[in-house]
Image (cartoon, rainbow, N blue to C red; front, side):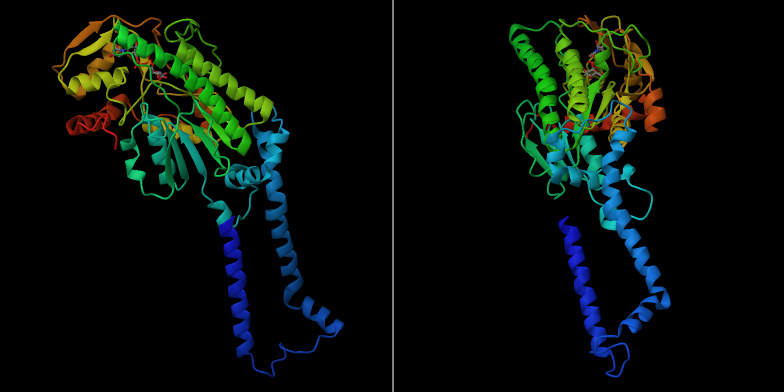
Length: 455
Ligand SMILES: O=C(O)[C@H]1O[C@H](OP(=O)(O)OP(=O)(O)OC[C@H]2O[C@@H](n3ccc(=O)[nH]c3=O)[C@H](O)[C@@H]2O)[C@H](O)[C@@H](O)[C@@H]1O
């Protein structure tokens, strides 16, 4: 807004200067400059000459289109286009007029009527909050948003996130990083307007399936923490989105399908989840997060998007987060045996992180609430994955079988028909292409031994 005002006053000034200049250069006898008021017929005659009336009418039309018609179209746009229940805008939302107005200008290019838009409005940057912004997926999302010119505020508790993941943005005035745990409310409303993206702690530590007592206590705390992050974190960020009139994207998970009885999994499948099992903190936490998101959408009019993310890998994964791809890669580089849990015949579908980030952005920008499966439909058993890792890093690597964790899903593969049709998105990078990119990142970090070092 400030820029717009500044621009306008500069224009006025330069127009004034121009006029002053032309005044000086006009010869005193010029018929166009006279100190006496024109007579009425002469003024009318002047007005109708050289199509002046036409220019005035066109000017009024342009002004009407962009300053009256456009904001009202932006406001009604989401109601007309959303696939889900119509939004009921509460007094809370419509009261916060400054932020919601800003939001409608900043962040709704698709609802804009066809026609010319003043450059300052079209190119206006979005302001986006990425929770978990220093984490694996979050930091890649930050990279993409900064690269396309958005302002980004990353929030991270550095539980699994690392400053090193976003250190290349330090010093960039368009990036801020806040240390904060989303389990606690955060009051950012004075600074924010725009999309709110939500990317949260997404790790199940499974390094040790039969934990020692100390580790068990730690894991138990972690489970509670995971649940709190998913439920209270989502609630807090939804509240913020509601207060500032921002769009909110929830990164949910394929784990909401549990140990699926339907294969591949469509978004319409309600899942098969053990509510009291060892994984429930995560599965049920994310299911509750989806419920809260839809309730805020239907009940409080918050504009939301839901992504169900399938197993994702790539550079910047924690070296020791216990997931299968990071485990296998780290083990192969360290010349340790690859630990296959159970018989290794369970399946997963692995998506490269840049494909996921493209999908998240398409979802944020699109007009559909979701949920959308975002995953690579290529399905691998863990034994097949181990073979690809061996081919990529060390063909002589050994496999060591270990007992599996409880309630481990037997198979998982996304049906991405909906994302293809409605978001025009599908993954591009196969496992064999993506794995080497991750391996070089892991090698560098292991060599530099900076893992765990606070940058
Ligand atoms: O993307 C998802 O949907 C979810 O994927 C993972 O959950 P999971 O599918 O269990 O992924 P991994 O922990 O990587 O395990 C995948 C399979 O590999 C096996 N595994 C794991 C680690 C290992 O060293 N060896 C091994 O065989 C597991 O038993 C499991 O069957 C993550 O933990 C979740 O955070 C995420 O939301």
